[in-house]
Length: 129
Image 1 (cartoon, rainbow, N blue to C red):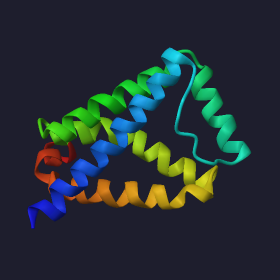
Image 2 (tube, one colour):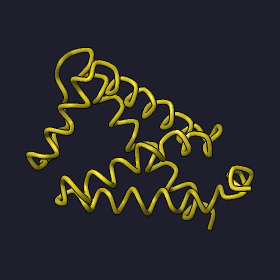
Image 3 (tube, helix red, strand yellow):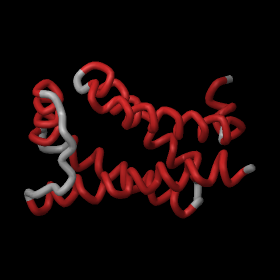
């Protein structure tokens, strides 16, 4: 049961953020990104602002890679998820408000994240006291 409720969501979320982090940093270093999902004009404007800020895009993509590495290696996965949760929250909000066509991605992120939050709830308990 642990494989279905913890390991599969952990690996899927880790792979998703690994690919996203690599693609985002390729954009920073080469000027080319390879994953261009369809988005709305408002979504494109938001992404453009993040990319041209000068610091936020590389920071976010580095956090993506660190969080993904922690999830995929199963070393401090609760910490990896904690690093990724603010980014996941923004992604979900982005799709709810700016790009409703991406709601399936947001739903998958929400489901995988919720499964891991429940699995690691004992590690987060001290934060909620």
